Image (cartoon, rainbow, N blue to C red):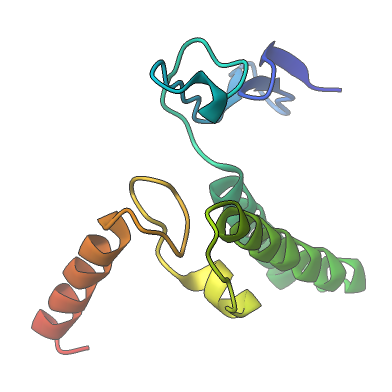
Length: 141
């Protein structure tokens, strides 16, 4: 069971081996000019995305797999990759874009700093990728 702070956006997570409270907060957006854009949201605050959390879960599962190999971990890792791909496919479809990318692409592409997706029209992704390419070029990669 998870403790809900703000339904759909903020949660208090179970903490083991300590007293530190862990919260998970997803971005909450509100568009006062177009309330239908984010139905039910009357305020906004920063947070993460499902995709970012799934990427963390993938890294965690790979870490556990390196510690002790387990067949179930292989399946969990594959399913988490599918979750990432489906989230990107969903976003593309909702924005009337075609998403013909691989599981590898969905997992490894940088995320747009504005919308949090691997394929977008925001321009932030292009700017971020350009910075990475310039930095790699400077470092001889």
